[in-house]
Image 1 (cartoon, rainbow, N blue to C red):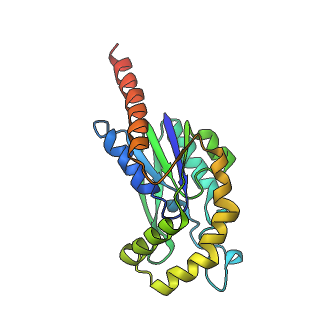
Image 2 (spheres, rainbow, N blue to C red):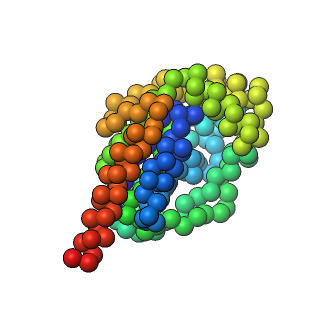
Image 3 (tube, one colour):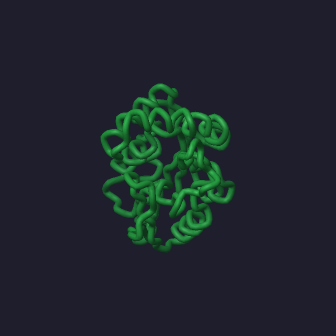
Length: 209
């Protein structure tokens, strides 16, 4: 099973890029997107609070054991029950969504390349490198429109946690990427989609040869 890791800062377009790749392999239904945000801890760790607010941009905010377990199972052809995260209440819900078995998985998240065990599961590692002002504006529009956040809250969170955590923890993971992609992602999506299609077609042909 083919696994791709897609990392990048908040607002860099990770989900959009993964969906572009998925569109290019649409004839095959065995390709899934795994969102790292689904693996936030059930409740934010109290030791990560900054100015009384939870720090969702620190690596320790994620449930790494569960994510490792699920990726291992997907890699070996099993299905998993992926948690559902509610951005409006900043909590994991009691619901899950079944994923798999898959022929290929695109895992996207800010710290997709952080954990050494998870990095070893990836056949290709991608980092989306987008300038900070573009990422901030995208995040601003998204969080107001989709997540019910206020302008003041978004700006405060950006300066308190998003920006410093990006510099301290996230940007250094760029060194692990096989491919670094800029703001224009169409060509990279074409290339990655073609690679996945080639592998999927080979698997299907092998079944009937």
